[in-house]
Length: 323
Image (cartoon, rainbow, N blue to C red; front, side, top):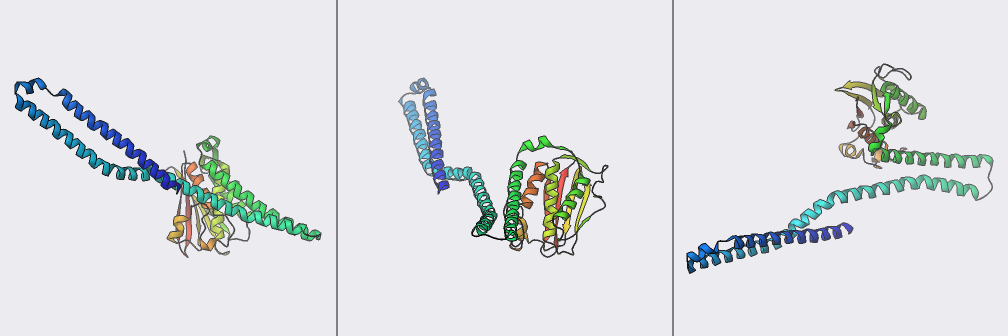
């Protein structure tokens, strides 16, 4: 409703502006023609010359009136089209913001409800130390998930700012990737194993490896998210492979898995904030992982591309310029 009213008002404003402009132009043409006409020559030609001039003026006036009347029909339509075109990006931005707020509210509501429920249950009556410990652990886990969600939202907002580049330092990509893989493995040891390509090396190795200007914290988060995603949707006996290569002054980090993969429809929405495929709803996460990686890549002047086939795995490629 708010956009309909805005389009209506813009249409009226555009219509009024165009009609005033065309009206002023028509008057200027008419008065210019009549004002610059050489009446002396017409008088020399006699009454026939004056009559011919007056007839020409009348014809010009009628033509301008007919054209202006036609504009009264055409201008509202063009104004409406212009108003819709002007409001389209605003509407798109508003819808994205609403979707983001709705998604964030939904994701925050669940852990908050868990924390509230556990604490209220623990306070209903006296309990054993073990029961209190269990309630505290559940509340702490839910709080940790909420903290991760908040940090992701903060990183997303930072990733859209050009100020991010002010904190770039020289980063050894080999060491960063191997460290991110080690952290991911320690964080969820029961998931699929991680196999590092020889191009990556071992943690702490790579002083002569690929170096680039970047935010070490954000890049480690991006690589870690790609690895976590690959492991989350892979069988425990299917290894997730990570490699680094150079291509046209770019560092390419690839994370390849043989997991469940994605359909074309799912792939089209994979980087939308808070969007999750049906197969992912039963798994841990908030639907921010790939959106965050995409923002981090763009903040570094790079890009994220994903190739996937349902039932045949996924290849996530992070491209980072070396400059």
